[in-house]
Image 1: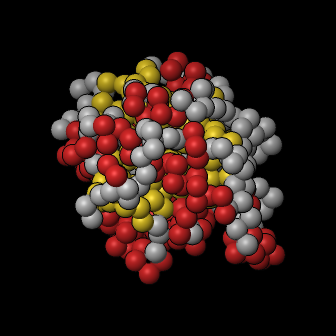
Image 2: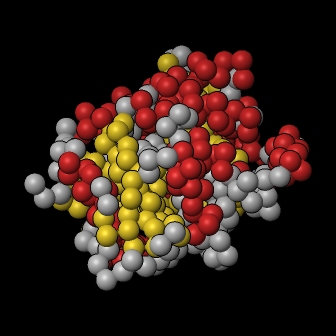
Length: 389
């Protein structure tokens, strides 16, 4: 399928060769080089996310990549995705677009989205939603606000104008994803309080116990985390059940970064009921290395990881079992989990953590964050469009 843009020499073509796949994976650092606020992600990290041989998403999704060309120069990319697990969960034929990166020009954005739209229509999809890369469990949303803020692990970066170009192509907002920046001080953990003098393991909370990460049991803990996550998020917008092989791949990718303090599991009567996972921000230690480091660059990166030279982190997963939804304990557990993370974090070098993303429509989590951080510092947006029969 080739989609020409009107009144331009722009052409959009599907990715069909290994060379063009490599170009697709590395294109953002070529497009956005020199733009204020952009730091190139590691090619290795992006390969794990986008390569059909590496990404577990391809086990349950059909994906087609497109590149936009102006002459022999690549100027944009997009993915069209049919996630069969998502369709099962939603009961609707909603396809996705993702990995949307381009020079900020209307004809490029429109042509890329038209290519994804046309392919999804051929697959029988009735709506198109995104961007997600390549799943709602991966990088999600198009950055609307926060381009000048420090980049965060597993979150995308886009030029500020890109959102308006997507809207001009006929796509409407369905949900915003919000991130909050919490500066860490000695008093930070106390901001997430439990009522009165309640204490974990005592009195009314006597049946509550807290566990940390065990490298020896990380696979088993990962499965507990996956089960809790799927349960806690099952009724939330754009949720796609996380598969066991996706959790295994996630653990394999991030375990080198993890310490026991990064994971909180809360049990009630020896049954897991809540969890939280924080990841150190990889961008803290790669900003001077480029997307494809030299041998010396890789040695620097290894040393920085070993010495844990991070100064920020992200609370990437936070959830409470649906069995406690609507109860006082269920409302209390997110605060307990975050407070425990922050208390442990006193032994780590972080000066701030990101709480996010949080669905704009998730009033409970939004209120929890805004009780301590009044306003989000970054905003990402999901869009949708009906696909004509």
